[in-house]
Image (tube, rainbow, N blue to C red; front, side, top):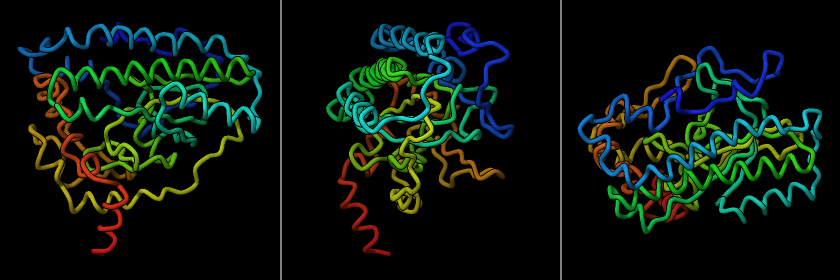
Length: 306
């Protein structure tokens, strides 16, 4: 699997400046690796015909993401004009991104032994359509999951090219198999907050979304400074619906907090079993209160009870 998946190394040399993971960073595993390592051997191929075409196309976009860094202008512009920022936001939405945020990548967010080229991130969300996720677990829900992986892979590559064509450096971070913890990145960008199931929750989409990013050395991005969504953590501590609904018991009742204050929300080895057996599972998304009800009404009711 490692040989099958692309990476940054073939396209940079030892003199290339990079942003490396922190010594305390966690190992990052992507969906195919988790299924192969921990999924049910008898059912790994179940539903494969529904996802293999999109998975191969997604890997192709991953390869483009890494290979295209060779087209960076290198001594590119590092100050984004107001007009280019406005055009960037509109371009992202025209391509199918639901929301866009900006933040700095902390080394602790980069997965162990991984690296990226630039310290700033443009973070993107894309909706997993409710009409499909309502049917989870099912082949239709599984197809929707991989539709968004592929869709975001295409979007980040087009945004990276958009920036390069305007004279800026960029590295597309693929939706499937990125080098950074996208949920943490998106939370820091102010797009939402991480729920007890470890997924980002946003006002518009709840947890029914996928994430990707584009890294750049543009210094004047409108970086997020605050996050109004962090109350979600307190809500989730009382809710626990995802914990009760998980067929594998993979979501921790008490989120594991490490010495460096990083967190682990699920046992991915347990999660891999229903994921591989039941078309990508996705029950934690489907059963989440924020998927089934209005974000702002939940917030209002929660604060009224405090």
